[in-house]
Length: 383
Image (cartoon, rainbow, N blue to C red; front, side, top):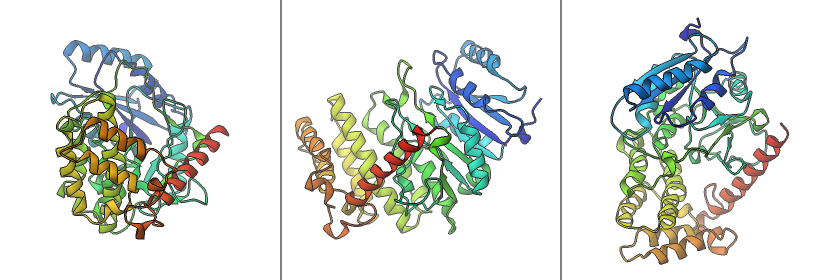
């Protein structure tokens, strides 16, 4: 039987629904076990009934390769959020490297082992995994600096790592403890924004963590959408959509960040999270109560500094329209379409023209995103 403290890496997999094919991820992780790599899974059974709990345990025992490599935790908090089981699983982990994964998703064979090897070679604190989306393309996050090896050590600000909210990959357990990173409780989506901000800021310590982006040639984390529904794609009330953002902007998170880190996080939330929420609500055909809540968030971010100055003019026009009390669904839809015309003048010029050539302004940000997408794709195709 494997001793928990002897494991090299443990992956936390929360299970909320016994109808899902959760064996896929657990099998992928445990399949990485080898003579030089001791792997474990912490399956967190979340808000399941007694019979459902028994059924999940029975099904997972079948795929357990090494006795002791699979641990079960039960969390019954009555909260429809992945934060509770993820926090519980990470707090109970004892391996040198830890990570989280969705029960619906999958890993390329050999990917986890390669992340551990790359992390050890680089003496990294965080190894960010390449993410293969449902359409077969690699996500262009983070949009790192152009030049050099993809897997070189990265700097959180210079390499725009705050644009990467997804924590998939692995991180040293000692770094997790030092940064006091936790998922935002109650958040149904975006629970990982504050979590990653703390990891990347090293819990407020002056020394930056050592972060690498894993080489896509060694495999990726695969998003799978064959489940009837995913929590991240369900229609939600605006406050449920914003819970993770509010957690990231809370005093407990922002107080440990430097001015630069606050600006990087604030700019990312404006450009990615709030615009994504507006896009979802246009798709749902519902902006009820959204504009007022979004306006509160924008106003809060404006107090950080000139975050909005780094946005494209079209992005800022969209946020203005999306936070206007007189906005209509059609007016927001029109502003969204303009913001998606990435080659237009208004999408390339910074809202504050003095920042046009800054790192987070549209020109350099979009070029870095395209560079990252091309590099990740090309290296993945070389597998």
